[in-house]
Amino acid sequence: ADGRTLATDLRALVNSRKYSDVTFVVGDPEKSVDSFSAHKAVLASRCDYFEELFTAKPDSAILSLPELEGPTFTKVSCFLNNLLVSLSFPLGLLTFFLCQKVLEFLYTEHTEVDLQYALSLRHASKVCGIHQLQATCEQVIARTELRTDFVVSLLEDATRFHSDAVKARCVEFIAENAKEVCASPTFARMSKENLLLFLQSEDLNAREIAVFQALVAWGNERVKEHEAKGE
Image 1: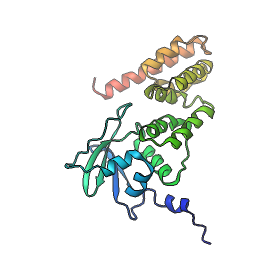
Image 2: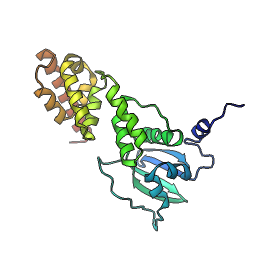
Image 3: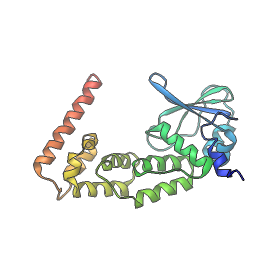
Image 4: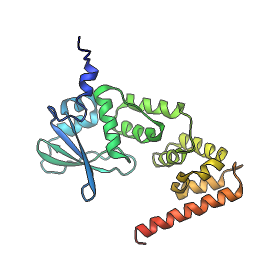
């Protein structure tokens, strides 16, 4: 026996041009794009979202799909039957990376899920109707311990995807570990909305000078953002 299984053979087809009949192009053409190859039969049989995409017969280069609930998604182009199709793909941030995660799961029914991107991946799975991947993400979110180096990013994702339970968990963790979170470079990436939540927290476990220094760093980061935009 050569050790081949259905799972290993299908995994070998992930982002493979072999027998591929659909190509997705992800990103802003004016900046940089990534592409990955896929197979319509696999995607359509595993996911209603793709089945709807592939069974539609667009008359023009723009394919109009039902509106998807949630945050604004990065635009993705799709070369389908030699026709360039544009669609809103429900993958939020880290688009190409999450596309790869979704594809890997659709082909193999398995993909590694980390808490740092679990909320984004859960939302993509929910919109696409991939319920088993959605459940896997929810298990990771519930079971994984928070860390000071990425709790701010998780808080921002929880806000973006309206996950109140995760948001409350993050706010409580940040209050209890305020000293370490304030000293983390990620603190400056906190949104204004969540910064106000942080300041309204009772019993912040940090000295006032540490909080003040973190606020200065946060303000400096906003100044840099405005300058970068030419404002």
